[in-house]
Image (tube, rainbow, N blue to C red; front, top):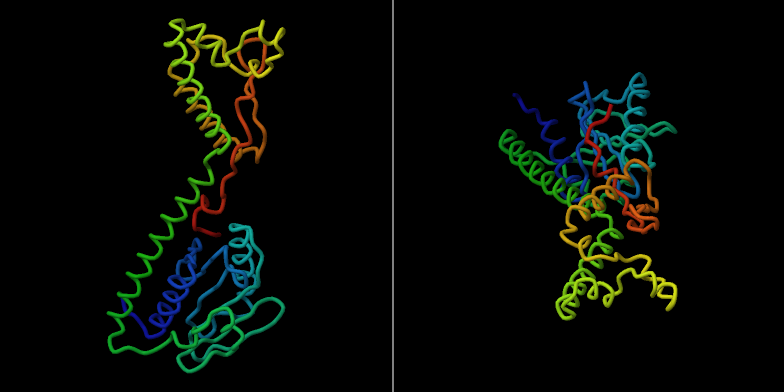
Length: 279
């Protein structure tokens, strides 16, 4: 594969935007040579297109560019202008209501206002002695940066998908189960241990108005090995928000009374779960 000087310029610009501003490359189906970047946290330009051809943004391409731009914006749930950064020295700067193209070369930037968002971008493009080696070096560093981004995104997605209310209930249930076992040992009676630790007992509810017992179990056997039930709770509350948004979930007990077992489950970050492909 022959690497041209404009390919190197493109790689230098990509390296700057990815490593310094956490942009991610988006591949467009059937247009693998078309380079798009996205960053949902960018205030000014959440989506960028990178070009290295003189006529990369002709009038006939406008509809295609705007359609891809809209798809990527929808992917990250953002709004922003169509911004094209072109490293070809003969490319024409464009600025109209539909899109903007800024020429970035080793000598100048056609629109200095871009420096407010990307300080130092006017010094990124430069010549090197060995184009092939520099291109390979930058490519490797970009791949490493993207791997780090993917790991961070995965960690954030897992954290966002964790139903916090359910986890809290699980912890409370485990603590109460431990207290119940301890009281059962001290009282030398399983049923007495449940009652002392606050288990359901109709007489206490009616006579002493201890209504909190309505939400407790009344026998020690149902407390044994609740790991499977907790796992089901966690899976259901992690899955439901993906399908039905954020809601309050209540489990009906097999007895005559109801037990609110699920609290408000945590939502998920759909952006991190979406594939990095548009089109």
